[in-house]
Length: 495
Ligand code: BG6
Image (tube, rainbow, N blue to C red; front, side, top):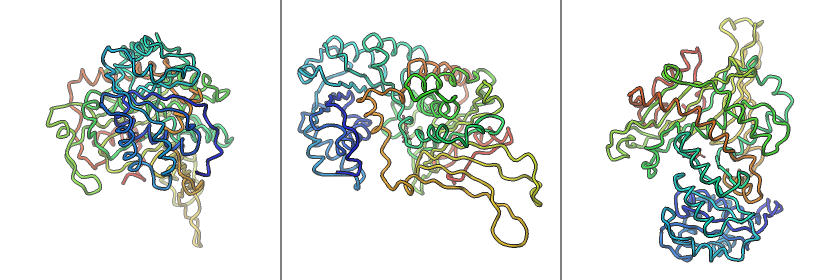
């Protein structure tokens, strides 16, 4: 149906989604599978089997998915003929995944499909991962060609992450386990690898001699909405930093892997996580800050505060955090990484900003206060693209006036095509058996090992997060965190 119709087809497969009627399945997984089916990559004899407690039969589930796809798939990518075909590939099984009953109906549905690639996608709380794995094993459903996908967060601290990894590892081999971090499937994030390692220009500058600091911002306008139950036991550090933001740090900071091989890339990422300078005690107070949104307005529309969304509970969960990270190795010593993420911010914008050092001496009159240093900005969303800020001469007579202008590479304008959602890419990677963009057990545990002392210090401080009005740029302490180091957050896209 599309210009991408000559893309490689996957072998016929069975994809079983636990939490099959949940938010993630409906908003992300089924649309991604549908769009890959539209392009013929998921063959029409493949099956998608949702498991949930909803009590739906196949027809009811298909109706639900059809309505959802019509709402979330961009009209330019929507195709009714493909939808009709896709719906016939969908099945629903009612089961309580937290219960003990054998997976009899699932086993019957999967019977005779042992030769196929089988994907078990666990889109549910990580506390259930071990139990589901064991029950799949007991029902004889784990074949040689089976893979299991674990949604983040895996555990809520190092001990629980280890427990989950042990339990799942008792059933599946490590190479069958795909720990998903959807940020690694985003176009700009993959482009970061290409930018760094397919261009000779940047790599000689990619170190603390040339780079002053790096900023990573993931700023969302949404609140916690229907996810308040999960979110309140998680917070911004566990929900976003321990996984998405630290993975971005890894891709920016890692040494060039020798190949794009699954282990080579993950080995380099792991070394970055292991080199993070641990934060504990007084470092935590100095290098981190937390916020929680209060009532305000986003895009002019009044919105409730976080505690109101929790029905007035006195929660001290952070919905915003900003922090300074240092990487203790030769390449990065002396170049801090500043991270911030928050809900109900003024604008939705996610960026990696690499701020180079200024020129050592200016020969241009009128630049006593310095020349604006170069900045490389990788925009994850919205308007994915890369900009390099360079200083040029303002055209015209009357002396040399300098101006910083962005060299702009907007993906949408340059490539003129819809950028696939991260889940489209990652689901196909699972089906084709390529775990390069998934987190290995040691990475997840190294990320928790760094995160845990921060959580502990926050809990021990007894302090509540600083309030910030919904629709603002976060609490003032986040600004102060950089100002103390003589720096500012890059705000071009935020205000
Ligand atoms: C999820 C978090 O992993 O990522 C959410 O649990 C967050 O809280 C989401 O909203 C952000 O993803 P994206 O792709 O919209 O930036």
